[in-house]
Figure 1 (cartoon, rainbow, N blue to C red):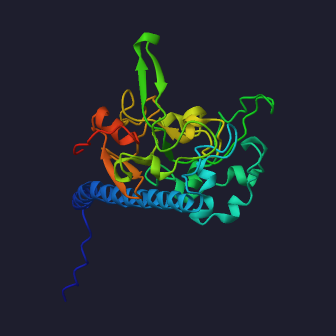
Figure 2: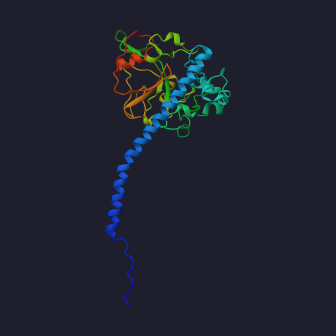
Figure 3: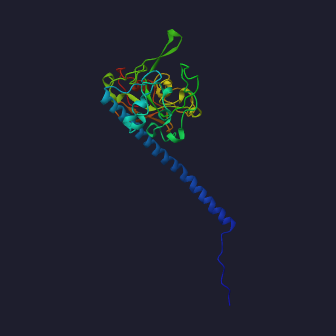
Length: 294
């Protein structure tokens, strides 16, 4: 009687071949997965910018102006003023608008809002609070850092210019939809170049080693550190195209583009290769120039 054959298992060589094939397939699929994830994050970021722009419009409809860049020199910023219009009325009620950022309660200062972040860079939970840089410039709180929630968007202050007669000093032109001065914001009637031709708010560049640090990325709620919640564009300030560039610019974590909400409420991708002259025209509210394709 012939004994039945025992089932034959994989040999070591066959197992190695199978593992090699699986590794190759995973290597082929990984870029596609990363590309798809990047596309999803880009769409989600655009949706967040859209909500921010709609919140700006709702504020304008109520007050006939855009939100102030900051209410007072050390007070709440535009990011606080739009909270009721991004379904954060309860958080807004935690703020005392008559007090400085440093005098606010911890819940008001440290509660991040999802809509103010780009998921390609980070979420509100991952970002947490500022680690250093939110220090009262008046010295009233003893020079201690007062942490607060972060954010990935900044409003457009406009352009800058350099006066060679003053030794190359750079000056703010204060020609954006958000004024450098504290108090009242601009009305849409001041944007003479057209709402669809003017940048309202965009993704702010933050060097990868400066997240939550200093003037680049202190609390988005803190009007005392204006460089963290605003940006300029155009001459000397092209869009950032590296993750570690140490410059106060607009810039994103999306490859090759930076996303902006325009004053008409639309959200568009702008290539990081856009000429600084064209970018400056988009940043200004009343330059009177015709903008070519970009």
